[in-house]
Image 1 (spheres, rainbow, N blue to C red):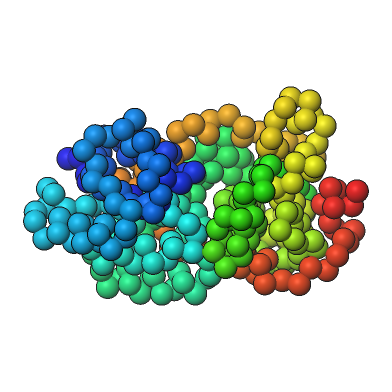
Image 2: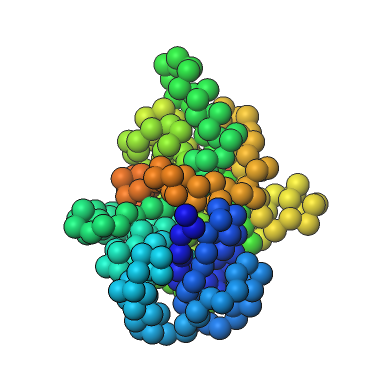
Length: 315
């Protein structure tokens, strides 16, 4: 049977992936909210969606539907709002008897997950999050390969992610530490989740450089040593990206060999949705290690460039 969805933050950058996933899994979007009204994209996927620019009216509408019938109530709320609102919107979903499907980062602080776990136990709903790299076929194959290998030493991993952003970024909520959680949280959390998923829990973490535009450091995992660098500064793009007029450069190497996952990104959100609808989605426990790591990165005092720093920081 088709399920009813509502969505928060429908005017945002990531919302179209959720709209497509809802559509592609054969379900129906019946309500949406965003303080910005540039939401014509709704018509590309659904008709007859009740749209609100005030969360209070959205709340009232969802509550009204809940009291009508099983066929009319909202079964899932997809949360694409700014990071600092995720916790509140997950709580809202549980309060109205819906499951929450929350974009990453699920929350900004690890203790928020503990509180949500208590609410989840008290409610009929479940909390799911989008950790889409875990369903990428190439990365699943790599995880299986690593599990088969009998290796005594640790892998040497280098994570580089440069995604050019204009001046608007720092003016928006994304540039405000208390709202986005900073660069490591906003643009890096899914990469940290991937590395922990592949190489085991964090044993040690350092931050070497951190400012509004870039951050980098070193993480020791159970089975890997990771030098990492994140940036929104186009000046950090390597020559090969500039020659191709690319504004984004993404690379993860393991023992100097590239982990190839540049293809196959198109339908990852849809695959995550399929898993959730089958009761196999990623939940609170899955999110906790990476949320703890990005929180520790945010709170760390940068040490300055060291021998273990990423190569870009040593330039």
